[in-house]
Length: 179
Image (cartoon, rainbow, N blue to C red):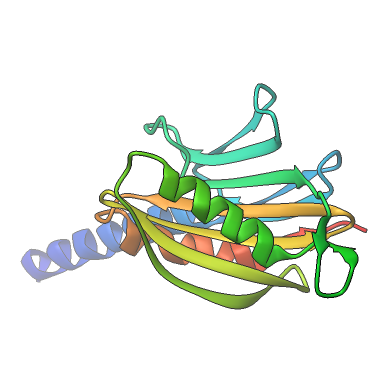
């Protein structure tokens, strides 16, 4: 009788330890940035780094053992452009997405667009652009709100995508822009 119950107890204890570890890895914390005017949830085991050296307002979300962030929120100044058909100034997300794609295409890197589709981000219209750079999987989500362009970027190596993409999707779903 003891010979059977000890292995069962060990299996149960291992299950509890693994379950507890899984919950701590997949639990989320709230992050608010009053200056950039947004809130987002992020995995509790990811570091938050506010990049004050960047020319844009930038917050990185990354694992402690990585130098490159997995997820980045950047705010860009919205600059209107001339719409020659309507003879007016316009700000469009498509303009910024195209500008970013043109920039990536101009670099000496292996840039390959995959797809582009409309999304809702923080209750606002947005555009999601998915692409690869070399072996890395990437997506950029653009939205304009409160006079600012918000860019949410995900960058990851193919081996890490299966475990991280669901976490990033939850982050994107939780993203809110303060009014």
